[in-house]
Length: 145
Image (cartoon, rainbow, N blue to C red; front, side):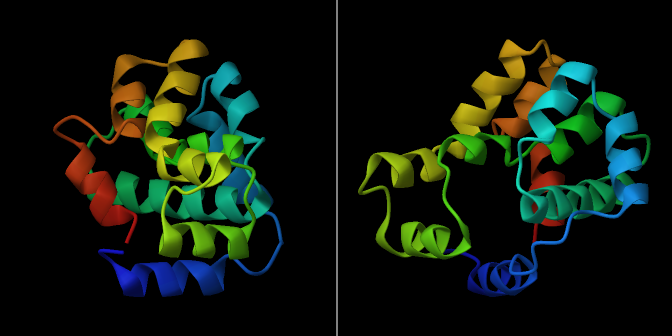
């Protein structure tokens, strides 16, 4: 729990189940390969809203961000689809650590996500960002808080 205020803010913004706006969904889709879009729509409404907000901040902060980098920002939490945890279970997983298989998947979502985007043919720059690696990752991390 290195960033408790981020977690508190994320908790409260994740409560409404509303989907992203149509404008936000179209913006995201234009930065994703069709195979990446198939992954992206598997995220919950809450996670898609969060990912779009992070990616928009990233795009604004990174002068000349490439499509692959923006895709990496949009897909940075894609590995969470495998943990199948809701908001409250994620809070518990954050507090108690990787004690169960699903909690472990939540804590390993970066590695899982990198495997998923690599498997659908994403650009290496996208895979790198999802894996929390590479020279651009610190900016993405900053945009996630």
